[in-house]
Length: 210
Image 1 (cartoon, rainbow, N blue to C red):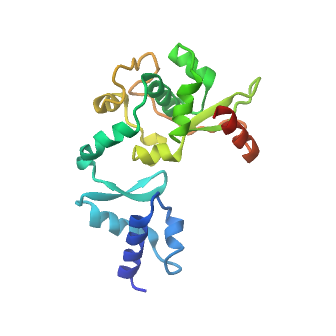
Image 2 (image 1 turned 45 degrees about the vertical axis):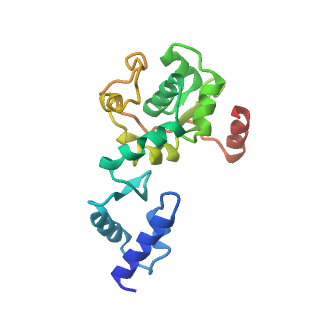
Image 3 (image 1 turned 90 degrees about the horizontal axis):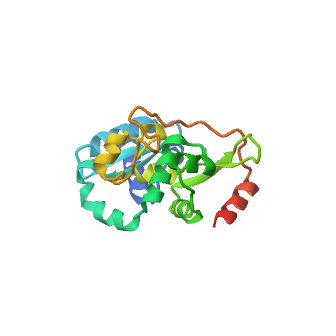
């Protein structure tokens, strides 16, 4: 199998998939020893000036609409994901301060967090429980999910834009960012909680939340 044929296989797999694919998943469909990185790089170059681009999100690969054409789909996406101001504030806090507990979210916002607000983010699969703090009561902590990264076209939370950029997109309209401790020089982290959950506990937490 020559390089061109392997490139066509990767291209077909990425187009047909309804979710991002890892380099490992792609390599499993190719001849052993294939240089998947070189193939993906070639595909990126091939589509760099097209209406769709090959991008890496959450450490995986997918085709997405070119950034300069994204406005064509914006209206449809806003209808699908219309969040309340409370939900937007909560999502912003989780994204930039994760892992974070419910009490910490409430402390930053200065108001109580209704159960419904967190439910909306969990149902959208943008937020997930990630573990428990090694403190009295072992409170649950929350972080963003792979679906969050995919939806916003990010490879990791370290790629989150600054607050000025978020305001420019309208995402933080009518949100007091100084009150949320969201400053342009704040860099999100990928710190993991002290006590990760096991599978049974994760399932139990999801049932309680729902």
